[in-house]
Length: 502
Image (cartoon, rainbow, N blue to C red):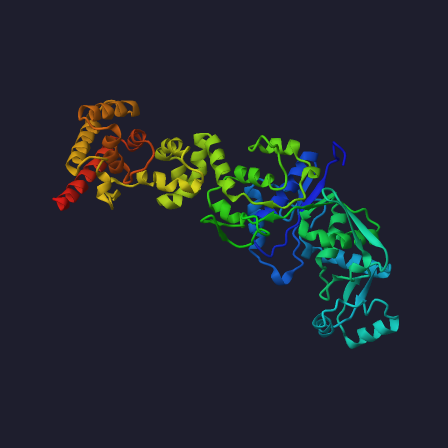
């Protein structure tokens, strides 16, 4: 390939039989990167010829997942384009036309073998035996008169070899006799994948085919079909398989547990699981391709500028699942607090029982967001860190009142701390973070109590838990009256608990 490649036309062509998984999303990402690197087009084409396994929810899931990652397509089923339609079941007429052309020009034939006859061959562990490849016109007429349904089979060359050049793997050569006349057009008039993909790639002027390495065995057949039609074949790029996070075998298409944490191959679980699209973009871009050995985090623009299919490694890559959480945390910390505030809203609104519109403009979340930004790796981590701020004082409970007792303090001493805290909160002016911190530290010193032990009961009183965002900032978010109410509730809870210890 030239150093400055011509604009590429690439397609992501999923089958809507299941939900979008990370392997498919990685393929789409590489397609998108290469199209943008070359100033070309990224096309979404839906290959729904397998009607028996068609899942009506799959197409919407595919589109949502691609758009979540920011992989907008230039042509596709919902936006159209110069080569519409982009759903194979809507292109049936074209496939029939080209199947007929192959038959008329001696590259394919009608086969009348019954399902029972094929099952007999399978029972004997035999491949299809080309039994109808050389039927006479009279034999064909007899089968037609019987009303036998027929399929169109490719008449694969019986001698020689076929070589497919793969951009990252080199030449792949097979004996032509290894391709045993596969079906191109089914008896219902719908094409098999092999005919449809070749016809569509030609008609849509696809220049590069990026797909998983599981399609390598089919590549020689597709090259034969391009040759039979007299069409130039696109360049083939068979992407390396993504291995399970354990490195043992291909990535599973079901949820599994890895190092004590559930791993999901489905993109929708990451959309709802608190992951940022930019983090997933960065993560998947490094699966089989490397931006730079010294730079792990990069922008989309940087990836587009550097990406080239010839730099993809053919070696299988184990999915470093734990690294995704690390990356996500890094991207969260790079966000402007206002941007993170808005990103948190869809995840927090249901947990807080609020509408997204109200939460998007809520002062409390705006002030709390920078306090938790360094502490979360996932957007879903935020709820248990901030939910206390959205509860009324009476809803803050202390399931374990012992947590209101400071380290190396008695219950009575901790009650004194809470009383001192209430006094500070009631009287301090202005009610600001710096003033609160100075007053609490000064009182701890005056009472000869270590600052950590002094603040612990107050922290639990304010948030209901021993670990929380910074205490004085939290009190400022709540305001004077709410902070006082919570300290008073905690004093009563600890008083009742102390009575049980007497």
